[in-house]
Length: 125
Length: 340
Image (cartoon, rainbow over all chains, first blue to last red; front, top):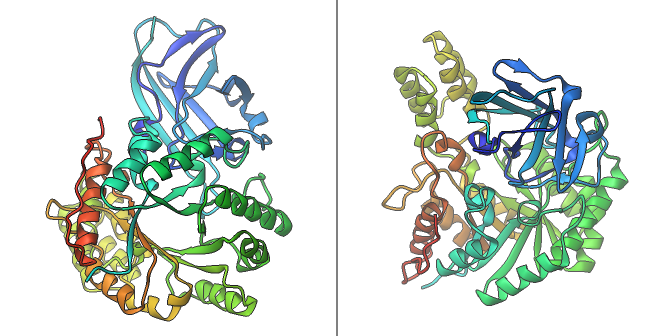
């Protein structure tokens, strides 16, 4: 659900040491951060290494490994998290194909879903 | 004569709009109230940011009470989740699960709810252990009986036996009407067709469902016809859905305190093509049910790839249907349009 609304349109931009965009959890509720198993960012066919992904909500930034033991914060329903990739020099000007995949552990499901969204995004100035 | 059954809405129904910030909590409550659906059910952690990990803000809870009062509504149920897989690699210990349920009992009481909803995978022992605390707080814990489970499934029978043995009236059931799926939902079939399912195989699956053929036979039949991935998925949906009998609720009626009015699609003439609400309401009336039927729209995920869901219109149509089935004379109508 809401799969095609994971990546927030118009949010791609270069940041210091890489690039970032806003992402939402494709779910009818939020999740505690310890239940986010993986976030994969692919840009123009290149997948960013797990250790180079950062997740930020309400001013707090985590690596994916750190998130696995965060029990006092969550990715709320519909909340736009800042999803960042460490990539020296960031992205070049123009359009980029971005895929954002999230694997999350849901207690009542007999499997661990991965949901992804791919969008053509123009780099905001 | 008007029925003792009351109408409500689970705000889950408006998820497509609330996710995008197109509807506020006030929009959701006002819209429901204007339709005469005065019972409000929520998924606590959808409606209240922070719950449960860092808690719900007092100001947000105060806003909830003020809106409930402003629109003359009644808080019905806080649907809690209990993430027993919170820790990677191990399930939450029994005592911690009970403590977590107690935390949600407190939250339900803080919101003025009468019920909290437990997901069906939670162990009966956990709920039985939390029951005395629920009694103290004036809350009933209701397990959601949801497809593929149903009232004759051994897991639900085990829950029922545990509740009886406990002697507590704080334990009960919240049936989801999706378990009475009498026809293959057209919006599901259309989605699988868009994904490339072969039309003749899709027709075969729809007809086999109508004929009540065992899911495994339908899957095999589809495979033998050369079904592609989308067509197989369409057939596999039968593993998780069935046309169970609404009258099976009768035996459990003393412990049924809330109803999820699940629907996938309301047509323009206010009919749910796959769930027999006429039979359902008949059974509930026969059983003397006096609680709420809360709309639970779940069609969004089946159509969002081709159109923006209009959850408010879908809920309106279902409320028109329910009001008619309940013998109400006034047709529910919206007064305030929600800005798209």
